[in-house]
Image (cartoon, rainbow, N blue to C red; front, top):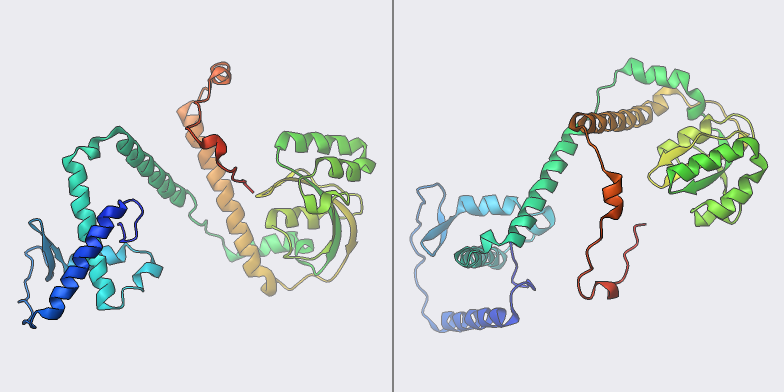
Length: 317
């Protein structure tokens, strides 16, 4: 749906439309009032709001198109003027689309490619929605998790440090190095960690309690028992962490009823991710994927379009 402010339509066209609207407004001021037109009912259902190019736009069409709008746009259609503008925009969009089809643009290779790309993205989103259905957890499973992991639900605070890197291979190499050289943790954090807020102080995070860190990090950190203990490589949305326990202040565990909802959410999310990963692995295994890396390594990248080199780089962080 295009709007009257769309930059995709030439300025001259909007100037013409504005002039026509102004002329129509002036004419309406000078013309004597007339009785409203009789109500017309469409054979397809609903009363006819407008006719154009041999077609009808009905109240059913209006409801259907408004329902497709995002809520923020939908609530703006509160005045007759806004409703009329919406109908005008819909009809203009239809008329311009018809002109495009008459010129054969619906068969234009670039338009067809973009439609195919959009269709693929929408189907992938729908499949991912299927994959991410929440698994069913029993109350007994939640209770068992609490009984086996009470340390994770204590009021304890821990003092920890971490090394964060983006590459899993590098994280594993650093973890192996620390197995025999724990005293180098601060040095490795300063030279390798991409967490700029903590790297300069050897990865030191200070003291923190439950609920301060992302779930994956928190589980691994609070599972550490003695000062100097190291976690395995922990993956979070930020990258790959190695966590070192510096100090621990114990507090009694929180009652089950106080944390059971948080446990259930964490378990559902973890199992959902495990199911998605398993399904990904199954899909790829069934497809018998074979990547010829020698050919891929020699593949040349296309030249950037003109002006692309001058465009500002967009950070992925």
